[in-house]
Amino acid sequence: MITIMGVGMTFVISTGQIDLSVGSITALSSITTAMVLRSNLGIILASVVGLGTGLLVGLANGLITTKFKIPPFLVTLGMMEVVRGLAMWITHNAPIPIINQNTIIFWFRKYRWHSNYIYMDNIYSYNWIYCFQSYSPPGSVRFSYRR
Image (cartoon, helix red, strand yellow):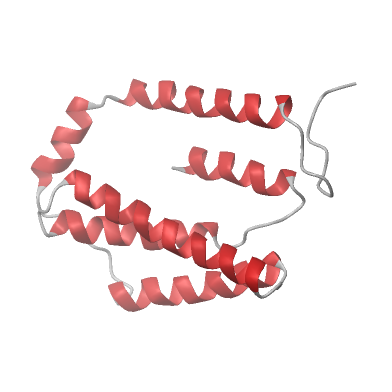
């Protein structure tokens, strides 16, 4: 998960912006995923709910930034605190145990740890192609090795 966040932040930082709410959004997405897993509704639904949570908060960040012309630093700083507070309120500052251990054991047996390295390699390759071989938008930091 940290790899995906790092690659995403590469795109944000390469445009001269910053997103402070990434860690809090990850925490909230993890909490919603764990809550769905705990209720035995399946890994697929849990993944969709977790990704949807992150998508909705990210969409809110983007809409507030673009529609109200508020600097991304301020929007993401405020959203970081809102999302962190929401995560703490949902969990009451307690861990969420996943009772169904078969789900976790099945996941690790089916997708072994080495597949994560292949996945990360694909993400890094796409990031390299997109960032270093494409044209940066006007007004942003030039993120290219062209001479």
